Amino acid sequence: MRGSLRLPGAGFPIVVKWLKTEPLAGSELVMDKPSPFFSNLKCRECGQLYPKQAIHVCDFDFGPLEADYDYAAIKSVLTRELIESRPKSMWRYRELLPIDGEPSVGMQVGFTPLVKADRLAKALGIRELYIKNDTVNYPTLSFKDRVVSVALSRACELGFKVVACASTGNLANSVAANAASAGLKSYVLIPADLEQGKVLGSLVYGTNVISIHGAYDQVNRLCSEIAGKYGWGFVNVNLRPYYAEGSKTMGFEIAEQLGWQLPQHTVVPMASGSLLTKIHKSYKEFLELGLVEHSPFKIYGAQATGCAPISHAMKRGTDIVKPVPKPDTIAKSLAIGTPADGYYAIHSMKQTGGCAEDCTDEEIVEGIRLLAEYAGIFAETAGGVTVACAKKLIASGQIPAGDSAVLCITGHGLKTQEAINGKCGVPRTINPSLREFEEQVYNPDNASAAAQ
Amino acid sequence: MAEEKTRLWLMFPTRLITRPVIWELGKKFEIITNVRQASVNDEVGLVSLSLSGERDEIKDAITWLEELGIKVEPVEINTIEG
Image 1 (cartoon, rainbow over the protein chains, first blue to last red):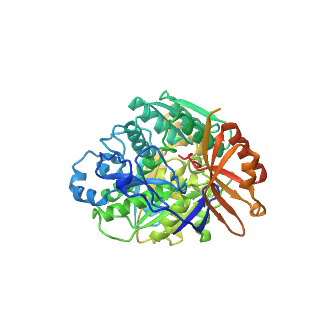
Image 2 (image 1 turned 90 degrees about the vertical axis):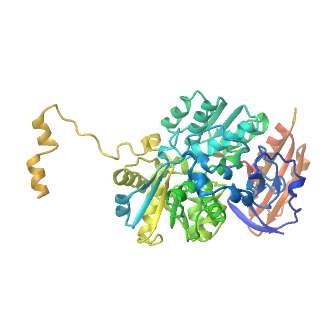
Image 3 (image 1 turned 180 degrees about the horizontal axis):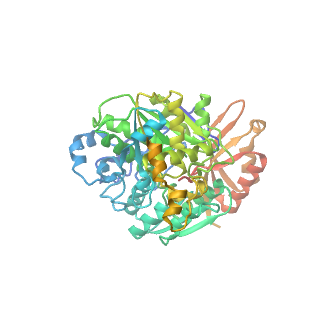
């Protein structure tokens, strides 16, 4: 049998041949199957099936595990009408999410606005543009509330009392908030140099914030050791197969909000590459279930040039993702030098006919300002990356100017104010005098002359 | 001390491809090595390896591998994002 072996730390995919056993039949597994839709965990590499427990790596080949569904069963019950009859949250697609019972954490998460941004479309030079605005996701203003809701709902089902994560900020905020609301004890591990807004945004929920000196790799190692030793529910370690599936809801919502159709072009920021692959999966699932019509769609990945291992591999025409040992960008939430899903993200882009782009820190700031000034949306640095890369993709003709595109904006700008501090001008200060106002700010005579 | 088990990805640089490093590892440290996959070409060797043993012994083994110039990553690598 043929498969690929990749070293995530090196991003080296090497195609090899190896012997492997056939995946276990479903009846041979220890099944806990109250959900008729969410069947098993499945190795993305070899297809081996696993029971729905807090595991994330295939014992056989160390490939990543992901949720596996019975699409025939889902297709027999899930219709547009049923979805539309449900509350406007991400859980309206719950048959396609990896939990057994009813969701218990984050009931209000998701169904964020899909904003038609005509002025920004004109500024970027494209006919039609939508912003999937997860800067207003509940409760912590980032798309991470989607993944955390699923991870913690599943953590409750599996009986965890302590949950944790390693994060550069947004995920920490979301775990802290959602664990607080669910009454779970939580620990968040963060790099010591994190932005103050994101640190406070976790501390306020009463979580245990552990600030760690050292590179991200070292933080990751500590997390894997803790998860293994204490049996905590680490949302992005042993609960990762559940956590990652939450990202699909962003794609489901885009398709529903566009009137049950897929966008021609979707631009997605990439850190590990997971969000991009899950949006691709969401579109494929809606197609398989007949919830949207078949139409061509392309997915594009956006990274900061200071940490662009996936974009650089894509531009080199390879799926060998070379690690970036020392990321150097203001887009810290995207600064993953060793992207675990980089290989899969490249294949999603290739399969759909999309591509990757990256942008400098100056372009990120310009992207943040463009989004704010032309669409009224204040995004964090990852949002600036998405807008800046979309601008370049449109300018180069890779996204045709006559088409329609959706930009995925994943976090609020209040979290990364340091990135644009001093780059948006300063307020003009005057005395409380009308004459001074007219002299220094607004002169009606000059204004009307200028208008003529 | 309690026995522990850890799962690792190893990347061998070109100069170490032909050296029997995993055999040496088993001789040097009181650990059990279990290779789950391996791939070697002219430039690089990749091995997915499970190590069982006492915690300190495993840590010393990993340090030794890294000092040799082998990149060692837990399979849980890249937990940080967002």
